[in-house]
Structure formats: structure tokens, C-alpha cells
Length: 74
Image 1: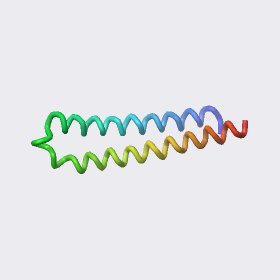
Image 2: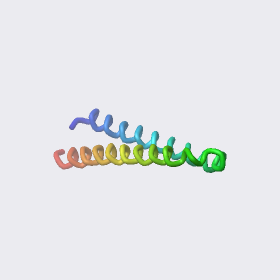
Image 3: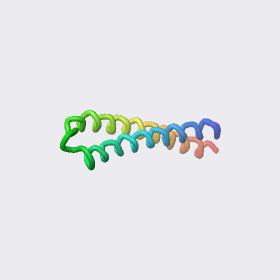
Image 4: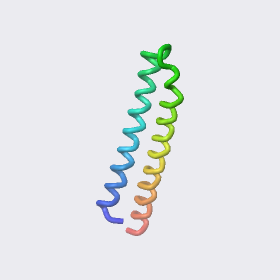
């Protein structure tokens, strides 16, 4: 795998992490500011966080695996 492909995988992992962090921030804001009026939104929001974290984990593992494989073949 060339350097550009590794950079693209790293960029994708970072994007997934940013998205997961944004969803987690939305949950934090709801809990901090609107818990008693919007608590029914928590399960849906929590599921978005969970899915985004899984997507980040998969992207990160793909990047790390490619990086390891690349270093072993170098």
C-alpha cells in the first residue's frame, strides 16, 4: 500500500472519530441543558453514538492493519 492510500485511510478514521465525537457532544448537550424536556430522544441519540463509534473502530483498525502490513513489507 502506498503512502497516499495510507493517508486516505488515516483521514477516514479521523473523520469517523470526529463524527462520533460530534454525536457524543449532542448527547452531552441534551443531558446538560434539556434532559427533563427531551429525555425521550436519548435512546436514538445513543444509538447514533454507538454506530459512529463502531464505524470509527473499523476504520481505525483498517488503517492500523494497513500501516502494520506496510511497515512489515518495507
